[in-house]
Amino acid sequence: MSEVSDLGVLLQIEARALQAQTLAALRFTIVNETHALTPYRQAALFEADGEQLRLSAASGLVSVASESPFAVWLGQFARRFPRDGAVHRLDLADAASEDADSWAEWLPEHLLLVPLSGPQGQALGVVLYAREQPWDEASVELAQRLYSTYGYCFAALSQTSRPAWSHVRQWFKGRNRWLALGALALGMLIPVRLSVLAPAEVIALNAVAVAAPQDGVVGSFAVAPNARVKAGDLLFSLDDSALSNRRQVALKGLEIAQADAHIAQQRSFDDTKSKADVAVALGRVREKEAELAAVDSQAQRVEVRADRDGVAIFADANDWLGRPVQTGERVMQLARPEDGGILVWLAVSDAIQLETDAPVRLFLHTEPLSPRAGRLIEASYQASLSPDGVASYRLRAGFEPGTELPRIGLRGTARISGDWVLLGYYLFRRPIASVREWTGL
Image (tube, rainbow, N blue to C red):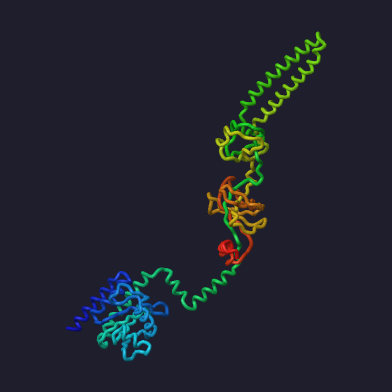
């Protein structure tokens, strides 16, 4: 009946092990519930961590305090466990001199070491059972039978609970670590081209500014933004109401001056003293004629026309209507589509050494998968504020011959390539610059 009873307990414990959902639950079963099959006073589970054994569970404890004296001594004691994959029975009488005193203090006299192995024979750990009575053959055979199930369950749960990076971490143990570090060091010597990213915009490289010809107020626009125009087409007009009023005043003033001159000439025939008034009156007439001519000249400059074919580039007509402008203030630009180029605002913090004709690739927001190639034409020597309010260098680049020219005004990101450098410098350039900024080294 004893064998039948032991078999029932064995099957019950195996069922509990197979039902365990986590490694923590399986550890609890190994160190606590095995007591029903082979009684013991203490149990401790050591899991394989590379070449070392790490204490992960103990009977009667929810968690193991790795800093406790008992755990520290067990960790040292486990370094001297046999690692041949067989079950071992150890007695206090046979203990080494460095272990005898602590063994007598912390553990009973008789120990049983049962290896925990996976289905392919891989070493997963060792379990220590301690009690006052010697371990008989029956108890050892039951433990071996039970641990075939424990090893299978432990290996399965270890695979499901182990994070993906743990396989990489395991590979980096020992000799592979130095091989990987050597390969990494050699990789840092690979030459790469230094490059930076910066906001960019498609512009016309040879655009002509269309400015206000005189002080006034913008009255109307004859073209829409980005519309094609021909030479002589009307672009915009200034409000002429003030000039019209000034012309009427100047015209009336001229008529009055002419009438006064006529009266002075009539009087000069009868009174020789009035001849001097004739010259004054005629001078006033010429003055009024000059004022009228000046007003007429300004009236002719109210309409602004294109002096060449191109595309009218400006933001929105409503931003200009009714707005006062001064002589020479730019209202729009005239550009030829074939003169398209790239304007790049390179932040001072990202600046690298750039030479003329450096490669530039433009990734438009509208076509991120179709970059355009170009070459650097010029770079400003002095930084200025970009439209985003960042201190930046102004770079201009032209498209490579044969490149499909995008519409002027489109925005994106440009990658500007500089000199060839080592990969290590490419990766750590900015951290090095930050360290130098803070330390001055």
